[in-house]
Length: 339
Image (cartoon, rainbow, N blue to C red; front, side):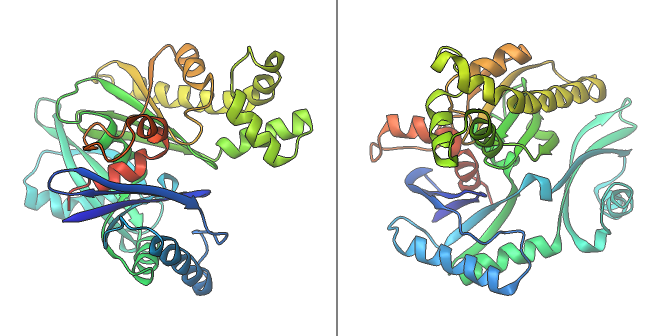
């Protein structure tokens, strides 16, 4: 059985297809995102988005019919709640009542799932991770995929997909911070014990960095984008002018990461010390970004490598896969999802 993981980004759509049983890589690819927004509720926009996907994938030869799709982190509710120790049957009844206290919309309007992650207070209580997404969002994604000619077999928050393919969730005791810097947003997730414990999303990403360069240096947007990719946060290039233009915006991202770390240290006092950061997204590979984050946060920082669990079998260039890895982490993780 073959399956495709599909990342519907704001500036690019990306896919990774694999043979499920053997985890052999069948193909991958990307294309600019449609001009219509996924946030639109207009039926014509949804139809247009589906037609765009259909046209793009008709030109690809390695696309299976079964698809798992990533949900934008800012659209998903993810929280650990503490409840008294009880049986699974009792928990199934109690969770909807508990969830009502935390969800921003009525529970009748969401699709939710939960999982017990650990006992606390000498077995008297248990921590449960609750994940929920609006039903209207699920319906929209299902409609888009169906109209594009595919069968939707799974939906998942993007950071959960990233954690699956970049971290050994079964054996690694190390707490890890995932930072996914996309075009329009930055998503963060704290992961340990096989569970995404905490997520945060902010509306600052690579596009804001390009705008800062454009405004500071007087470049057209396309030129600013090229300078960002070429010089990034490398202070030794162009007398540090590009870095100086980007730094204030990038420090906004760094400050939010610090807030996420502070939350973890305050609310997860019995958890492992966080020492590692895994970076992915289109901004991850910019010159100097990884070094800047490692220094600013005093963490071991590494670029995401989503191909660890996927076999190449020599069909693709290892060098190319390494280069694109950070940007394909969501799609690769979705392809590996069990269903």
